[in-house]
Amino acid sequence: MAMFTKDNMIMDLQGSTQKEILEDLAKKAYAIGAVKDAAALVSDYLAREEESTTGFGNGVAIPHSKSDNNLKATIIFGRSQQPIEWQSLDDQPANTFISLIVPTAEAGVHLQLLAKLSRQLVHPDFVNVLKNGNQDEVYELIDKTIQ
Figure 1 (cartoon, one colour):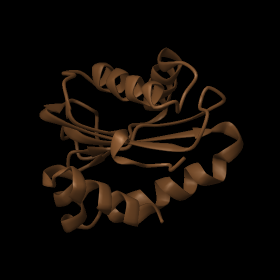
Figure 2 (cartoon, one colour):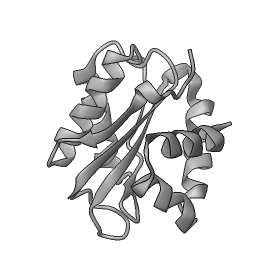
Figure 3 (cartoon, one colour):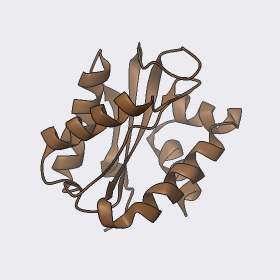
Figure 4 (cartoon, rainbow, N blue to C red):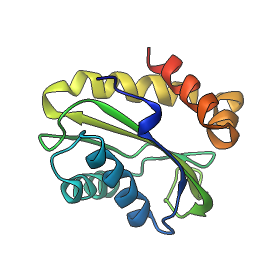
């Protein structure tokens, strides 16, 4: 199964807090069979945020988890209409989320994905599509980036 499909996208996240957004992403990950347990993924996300923020700036965060709870390398995309406080590097809220979910045994994949995506976040055109593009445009952009 592909690491990223249109089924991995939530174009209208409803959460209003960081934890609620992470719970929504985890529910999606569980629904598509990427994790054994959604609550464990939320715990992984929160533990990672405690280490340092995953808010890269410009309204984009990349919450990620590397854990034995994770069944396969997966990317989940989500976007919220409202800004969410995320303690981002630029002190601005986030509303666009690219979650990386990787089994412990695939640590190299985790680092490759994080590097590929974070390198693109310095490009305004890339960020603009993430934040404003329709589902097809966002899907094509992320799919092309991770290839």
